[in-house]
Structures are given as structure tokens and as C-alpha cells.
Image (tube, rainbow, N blue to C red; front, side):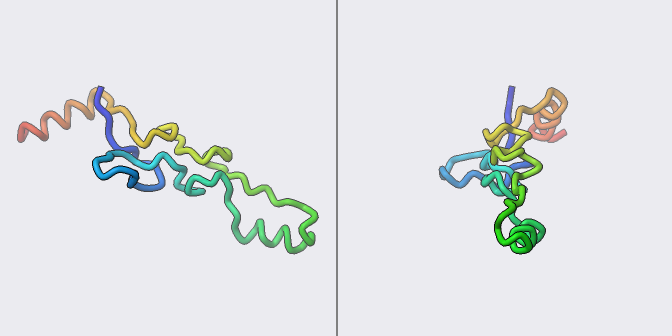
Length: 92
């Protein structure tokens, strides 16, 4: 089965010149597993740092990995997509 770049990763994999695929990181938290924005900052300021704001990324649940490809940067083509790619290559 053929694969293609994951459309849901944070960005392209730049670790290798010949690499194909996404970088495998969550596009919401950019692979950190945490989101720290204005609401979280206000919580910590208002409580003088005594209450830790929950900064866990809601998309990846704190793993930092793209949930579509599981961190590989590639997804399998289903049979319909594979057939369409063959037709495009043949000029149909």
C-alpha cells in the first residue's frame, strides 16, 4: 500500500533532504504537548501562581504527536486514492 504526506501534521519533515511526509508533530501545540495562552496566564497571575492552569493540548492529549498519523508523518492511501493517482499518472 502506498503512503502520502500526512495533511494534519504541524509541518513538513525537514530532517532529511530526501524526506517525504509531515513532521509527525501536533499542529495545535507544535509537538510540545502543552498550550499556554492568555487564559492560562491570567489564571496563574490571578492566583499568584498557586493554581497551575491546565495547559495540556486538547488535540493530542499532551503527547505532542499528530493524531492522524501517530507521529510518523505519513498516512496510507486508501484504494480509491491510489487508483486516482494511477489515473493521473497515465494522463486520464
